[in-house]
Amino acid sequence: MNKVTFDEEVRIWYIKQVKAIPPPNSNSPLRDQALEVFRQRNRIRNEARERMSDQEAVKKLELEFPAKTFSELVRYKMLKKGLTLEEAYMDIIKTALKTNAKFDERIINPVLGLDKNGNIRG
Image (cartoon, rainbow, N blue to C red):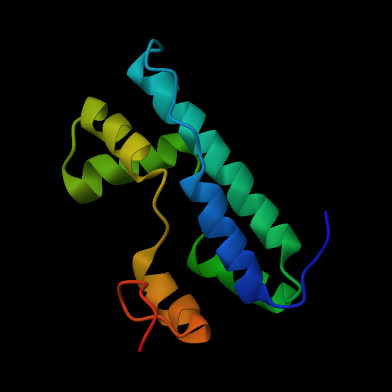
């Protein structure tokens, strides 16, 4: 794996990878589907952090956005969003293809000259 010069490039790579996560096997139990996309998302997040050239930024990300275990994420969704266990699994599947919009808006869009919706400013 090659490190890139600009960590913005890593974020763009990360966004593309997250959006390319294939849907889980719909024949599997809901928990297994959620676990499948959770693992893919974590693999992408870990690879993105390994690709970053600024290791201080990686440390900051790990403090601000630590990786949760699957159980922690399920529990978080149930407590924070008031979801049932099944709803938490569905939410994990639904949000697996999304990145942190506020982070992208604050960090990536200005670098790329995009507005808050990700459109080219003009």
